[in-house]
Length: 170
Image 1 (cartoon, rainbow, N blue to C red):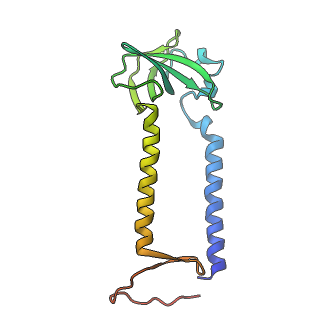
Image 2 (cartoon, rainbow, N blue to C red; image 1 turned 135 degrees about the horizontal axis):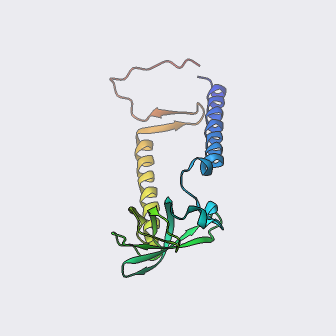
Image 3 (cartoon, rainbow, N blue to C red; image 1 turned 180 degrees about the vertical axis):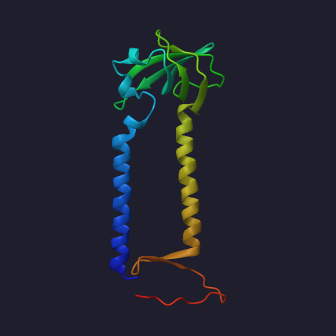
């Protein structure tokens, strides 16, 4: 395949991915069945008495209750929610998901409670583990394959006697 054709196909694929990402970001809030932080801002009463799924950062831990800050896209706290009876431990600064009925006094006894990050250091650990895993995978791949910049392709580093040469059609 000619280099110009490869670059053209690559450009079309990248434009398609970027277009899908923009469309997803633009329509996310209208298709999400639960209120986001921006929708809750100044309008919490509209969602009281309803089943909601909220994401937030744990601000304080007291006996059998957590204080969770739900934020908008600008990271401003729009709802300080008291969650009673969580079954898992979480530290202040951790991130949780709570699903249940939002009460008028801005409390909730969740039907479901999920700890996303149990502490602020958990996020750094996840990112570091992902980075190391990605580097190991890339290293293993590049050990087996080499990049041919001129043809914009990958070629095996070690050809065995069992492989057949496939002629280049370009």
